[in-house]
Amino acid sequence: MTGTGRANAVGALHADAESLAAAATTAGGDHVAFVADGTVDAWHARLEAGSGPGGTRCLVSVDDTVRGASASTAPSTRRVGDVMLSAVEAPVDDPASTLHDLLSVVDPASGGSVIVDDPGVLLPADADPDAVVDDLLCVAAEFGVELHAVVAGDGPVVAALFRRLPTADAAADRALADRLVSHLRETDPTNFGYLRRYWREARRGLAAVEMTYPQSKQIHAALPDPETTPRTLGASLRGLVAVGALGVWGDTVAATRYDLTEYDPAFVDAVGAVLDDIED
Image 1 (cartoon, rainbow, N blue to C red):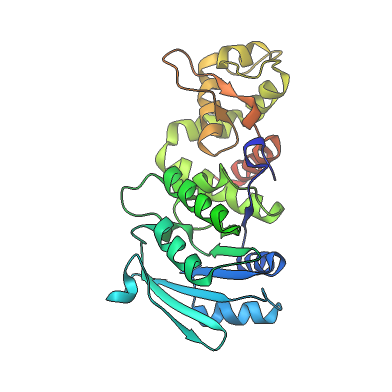
Image 2 (cartoon, rainbow, N blue to C red):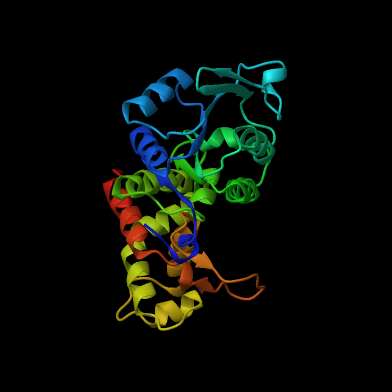
């Protein structure tokens, strides 16, 4: 699905490796793959089975056991036939610089793709997920390639990707909703609880309010016969923000204003389906 903030993004989030490989084939051109959830041999075979991108392929094994020069932020590469192989240690210390170095070697002339089968390995300790993802997308744009990733790994980096990339299909919507709801449940059980109970009312309020940047009390006022209070509705809305289905407008010391230009009702439905499937 494509929210307003993701409409111009080049790339997507995917539910599984099959969808990821299909995206690489569709993109064509040259190809860089960060492979952590599997092996570069298996990834190469998957590309070959689907005809794969026709340009240069650089396959990077991301492994927490890698040591030595090959694990530096400027990884060495070696060519085996028409494939370039490299290795880096997980988590990658400087993902954007590493990607830049690899793309400089590949030097894509007619577009292509970068794929990541576990985004969590591209998040160094204590790094800001949003800054990491922004830097990666800037490098991809500089070289004119698409960035595709599987919905896997740590919740914060997946959420940061979702704020910038669309999902590829309904399967990716469900996988993403499942992961982000699980992360919310682990990190913020209070707002998770309110969202689980009141997500339908939050959705109705967001559909009913006739403002672009409303506060929770204004959304609440748009509801006929609400079950929530402005406070409990606000907690539910914060849950939607946490899973990436709703934005927040600016920085303010006053009551939070929600950004409905970043509201994704279809993803709210995917989140709601996950919440409804949770057993007590």
